[in-house]
Length: 370
Image 1 (cartoon, rainbow, N blue to C red):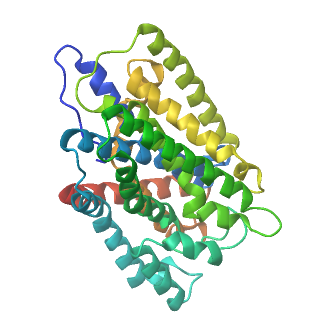
Image 2: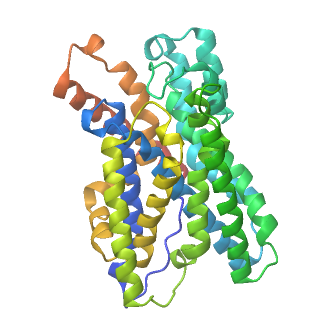
């Protein structure tokens, strides 16, 4: 996992269980939203925002881990950090790329062999998001072209993992505990705001939405919002800390619940075309996700964390990386034209195949290398 489980306290095991399984539940909801969106479920047209949930969660957990290591050892072993991220993410991705290239004519009917090879190289180099800025088209929901089209978000995360730890060290190294968190929070907040401004600036008559949608600079805001949250409360994921006041917990529960409701509405109603989402709404979504995560940490026994800790959602969250990785090429292969299926039958076949591939990948590859 991206996060480390803190030792349980004998006095309050249910709280810690809810907190950490709730984080898995957030992953489960995020990947479910993406899956429903990609399978063209009409009432989940905003499901693409599940990617932003992943971004905020990654920024939060990674920054929490980095700050915890800095608190514990007064240094960050960057080589070990990068090796762990690579070991966690790359084995399954390598298999995906190998199979995508080997069966290119079947899984990439809209691409030439040359285009598929370039997509594969860009995917392995973790820069495929920049390739797709210029090669997919001018609308958010376009033709399913590449079996690696969904890997743009993985590339942005890997770029964040590469660039953010040195920046964090720059402002946090050899600082007092509170000062390093304040510095990290201020840096992440300033960069998140700059990213949101860049996103709004890079749409309009002179720019198509693909630039703002796939650009690392414009999408980093969600990861950085997660980093801000880590600077504020991330230390509560590690070690033992005194509980906050009941008033704080109740207030955070109310705010987090309202944010969760807002996210569900966005999953249903967010537009898939036009410039509206790029004019500050992605930042609003990231803040809403951060509030839900804050509720998980501060008030883990409240309603939303309890719902997120239900077994099916947690199970989905644990295979979320594998499910995200394999569902897209399977959706390209399992089509109405090839199977003769339609409606509920086609949806069921696609979801079943995606879950089966995800389980195989998780148990045979992901867990083996974790």
